[in-house]
Length: 212
Image (tube, rainbow, N blue to C red; front, side, top):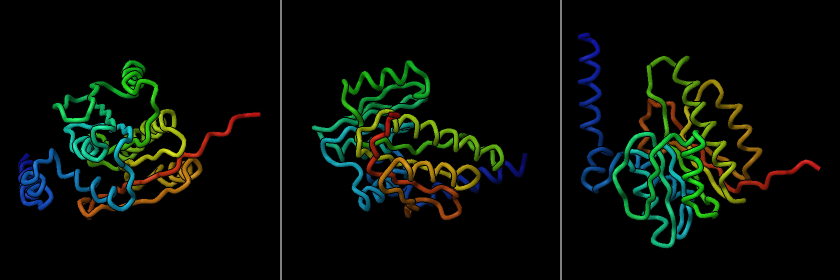
């Protein structure tokens, strides 16, 4: 028990001392994760004015907050999470599990027949600290997000998702490269160095081939 308390205190101190946490608080952002999206978007120009964007696993809303500004009044941001999320300008939030048909239908209905330009996901499972447990859970979420993106993106659309390197990553990465014109990995400055997380940027969704 003492070790757990000590570990919690260490995490809280690291969190409090984190320059990205402090910066987010000063600049009015909901999470330090916004700086990951901002840096990636500056490099890859994924989200632009007028676009339709879906943010999966959006709570507390940091990425949606940034995306709402980037798309502007002519654009559209949909956000979905099983947890509640406070209102944001230019963002339509739908609470629910996007893997369930009811939530998926609500998301598609909110698009009013318009297909998505970009799907973004910063989701991760509740970590146990056991790689044999956490990695399959993380890859499962990535695969679910990818499946939705492939169904809902317009041709030429893009996907940005957090992935943890480990078992299942290479196979998934190969599959993604077959479906998009350009696929690269990014490790933003706001990612903690010890973390196995990387962000995969996939742009230029290819038109799916139909059987003859």
